[in-house]
Image 1 (cartoon, rainbow, N blue to C red):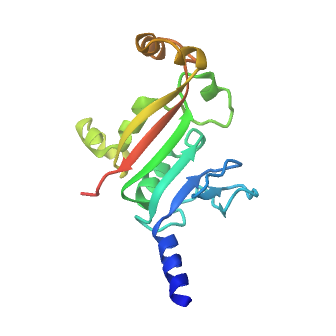
Image 2: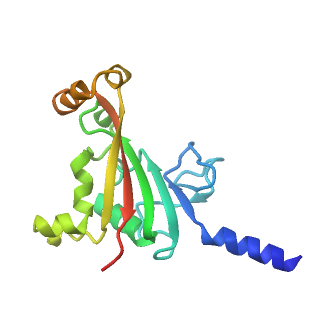
Length: 184
């Protein structure tokens, strides 16, 4: 009986998925982490205090919805995210889009996030743009997608693309899919 339990425990330890700043929105299969001790929170952590309580390269996947716009230090947050993720591991970050009222209505938001925001967390882009002095160690590849206002979601791709560039409140949220690049 003891061997089966040991193997099960080892398997559980092998996969660590974090739902950072989970609040009252737990994700099944993830360790739900928040500063608030809520019934849905598995681990209480202040994400503004570094380092976080996970070992270097120990996390398989992270999801983080509607938090990065609140963080005091986005560089420190992204560097810490990079530190704890395993090479090749993915992180999903969702936040209000920079030209949406959702981004600006909340007085606790510290910043706006656009498609270009994550470029700063890619080492190749920083080197190319001579920004190595920024103190960023994070190195992610990324892609993004939008959660659009339902009216615009039904329009043609050309109309949507024009609207995204020229109108406000077309995109409600932006979702980034980040992949930790192998350290050099």
